[in-house]
Structure formats: C-alpha cells, structure tokens
Image (tube, rainbow, N blue to C red; front, top):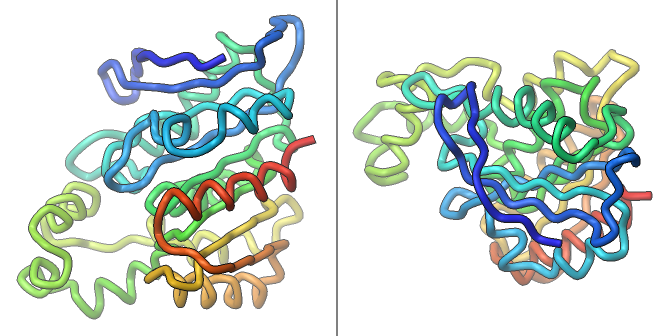
Length: 257
C-alpha cells in the first residue's frame, strides 16, 4: 500500500512531503523493520516509488518504507535554510513510530539513498551508529568535501566548476564563505567511530560508466582501511534509475529479514 501526503515537522517549521509504503496486511500490533530512502539532488520524496520497482519489492518484505523530502540539502542542518539532518535522523523516526509502530532496534533500522541521498544516508548512519544497523549508498558523492573545497573553494572558481545553483546550495548549507566543517565530511565521521563496537554495516554500489565511480572505489578502500564492515559492488551502469533499481533490489535482499 502506497501512502502519499505531508506531515508537519517542528524541526522544519512547515509541512513537508512524504511517501510511505506499508504492508497490505498492516497490523498496528506488530513492530516493523523500517527502511528510510533518501532521494537525489534533482528529485523528491516520490522518486523511489515512482522510478523503481520498490512497490513490487516491498511485497516480499514485512517492512515499512519511508521516503522523506530533503530538497537539495545533502541531508544537512543548513547554515541558511532548513534542519533536514535533524528532521530525518531525530524527528522522522518519532513520527513513524507513533503512526506505524516501527521497531526502535538499530538492527531493524536501515537507511538507503541514491546520489545525494546516498551521501545523506552515509551521513546519518555514521553520525548516529547507535540508531542505524545498515546503510546502503548508490552512486553517492561520498564527498571528500574538504578536498573539493580546497581545490574549488574560491567563490568564482566554485561557480565556474559547479554552476550558480550548486553554489547557492552549498552557501545555504555551509555559509556564504563555504566554510567546511567535519560534520559534512563522510571520512571524518567514519574516523570518529572507527574504534567503536557499534558501527553500521555498509553496502555501496556504483555503475562502471558512472562519473562517481572513482570516488566510490576510493571510498570503499578508505573504509576498509578503517576496518568497517563494508561491501562494494559495481556492474555496467550509469547514474540513472535503471542502475538504482538494480542496486535497490540487491540491497534489500542483503539487509531485510
């Protein structure tokens, strides 16, 4: 069953769109595994239900699939904008628990994303390892953000490389001077928890023709050096929904009971 609508978020101080898939034989007395799915930069909360076979795959699992709106925020608490990280990682689970009786156990909590949403999924899982048991990121800009800003951080250079809209996006997230902090850097977040006993299992996938392939290969190697439980797969594919759908099908088989 696909539910489409909006919820009021006190973190965002507004209503925000959401898509949820629940079992056809939903039982409020039962605790359900929950899968949060984050969309890409140019997408919205309905993408996973609209552009993949998720509504079909969901029939094979006794789980709730929650797809929030995160705009172009990279799932961040923006310097000039909305607190999407806090909404997704703190408020949304409370809303879902009250409405759908999702499990609170980390082993039953999975977060998945494509492209920008993959970055957001990694950010959530590595920032709150006590909350997420599994994280899956497809074709994500796992960002190596500081290196990118060191290379292109001068405002005019950034505008020339990434365009006016992306500059506005990152100024909204980081501030007008694009001041980097480690809360946005995936490897820094990983380093902070590398010695902890509780860490998320991670699955990443990227197409061999995807422009994000090289950084995903590098990210896999870096995470292995930190002794994370990570699996990387690649096969022929581009940065598109054909590939994301294939990756989603593989991921769900790995992370759901």
